[in-house]
Length: 317
Image (cartoon, rainbow, N blue to C red; front, side):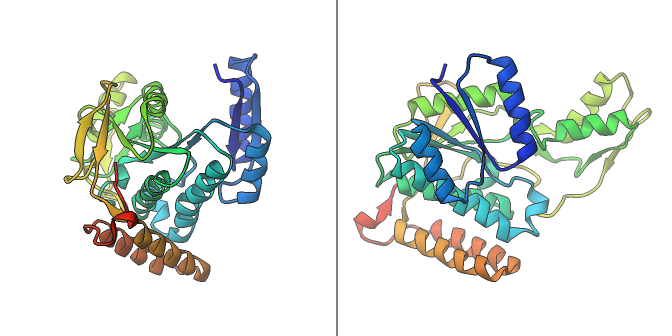
C-alpha cells in the first residue's frame, strides 16, 4: 500500500509493459513510470526532487553472464557506476532506505557480471557508514520464470520439439519463485538498519538436468525419447555450482526465518575508491580486457585483511 510508486527504467518496451500491468492490477495506485538510465545523475536528481522517495529498490543491472564476458566496459559502467550514481542521489535527497538487489554470482565471482555486482555490494556497504540513508544488500540465486531465466528457454525448446540444452550434466543452481524473492526483499528492507548483506534461504541447489527432465515430463513427453536433452558445455564465465556466501562470512540468523545475515571481514574505503577510480579510467579507454583483469585484481586486493587506520575501515555485513 505505498502512497506512490515510481518505476525508473531504461528499456522503453519493458517500461510500457510494466505500466500496463500495474495499472490493470492496481487501478488505485499512484503510479509514475519514468524512462531513464541509472548512470544519469541529473535525471535521478530531478526524479527524487519531484517524488521524494523514502525507499529505493535498486535492481538495475546487466545480468547475462556469457554476454558480459565480452562487454566488461558496459558491465562495469552500468553495474558499478550506475549503483554509485543512484546511491549518491539517494543520499543527497534523504532517502530512508536503499536496497541493492544482488546475486549469488557476487560470491567468489568467476565472471565479469559477478565481479561488478560484488563491487556494487562493497560500495553500498561503504556508503552506509557515512550516510543518513540505510544501505542494505539482499543476495539470492535464480528466480523461476523471471526475465532471462532458464525456465522460459526450456519451455520454448520443448514447444519446438527439442533438444533441450543444458550446459553440463552436473550443473546446479539455487531457485526461488518471484513471489518468494519479492517478499523476502521487502522483509530485508524492513529489518535492515544499514550496511547489512542479507542472504535469502534458497534451499538445496537443483540440477538443471533434473529440471529439464521434469519440464519435459510435465509437457507430456518422455525425456530421451520424444525430446532429447543435449549437453553443450559450460559457457564463458559460467560456474558449475553457485554459492550464496563466502567461506569466511559468518552467517547469523535474523528475526525472519528465511533471511540470514552475512558478516564479512573489513575492507579499507580508500582502497575501494582507488580501485573504482582506476576502473573508471580504463572505462574511458574502452579496453574490455584491461577492465576484466582490473576487476579481478581489485577484488583479490579487497579480500585481503585491512591494514589502514580504524577510521578508514568499514565492517562488511
